Length: 200
Image (tube, rainbow, N blue to C red; front, top):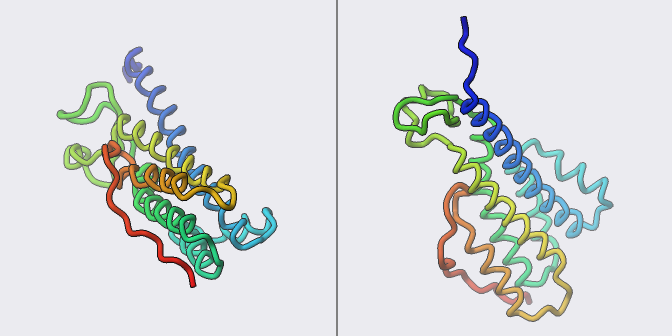
């Protein structure tokens, strides 16, 4: 006879399912805000732009379409630089998103993990992947960083023409402060970046 789950196990499952769904939803918002940028840069009507952007079956293809559109459009150098930095960060986050979508959730994992917890592993035996497994703490950090990336790209949409360079630099610094991987803590200071070249 199968032993029913304990209240602690039920609570852990509920917490995992909530955080899992919240984190994947946050990634969906990241793709959505880049889609809006694609619509703006190409000048396509929203419905058409959305269909074209999502006609690619993965984020790699969608990001390449946006980069191609940017190269064909004369944009303010500062804005283009920030958007490229944000795209680079999104590309580094996409692998983590795939691990969430295609990994195996394992309840009550092997020794070395928190009891009554759930981890996500990819393909191999959980005991072989305990050090690289995705935990609920990873999901929480990824959710925060996905939302922060979305927020930066969304605010860039709202920047009016003629905005002071210092305001754009502040926004760029916020993007640079995002960690390279979404389940990492953000660094305390941003990495140095190259200044955008003026357009001729």
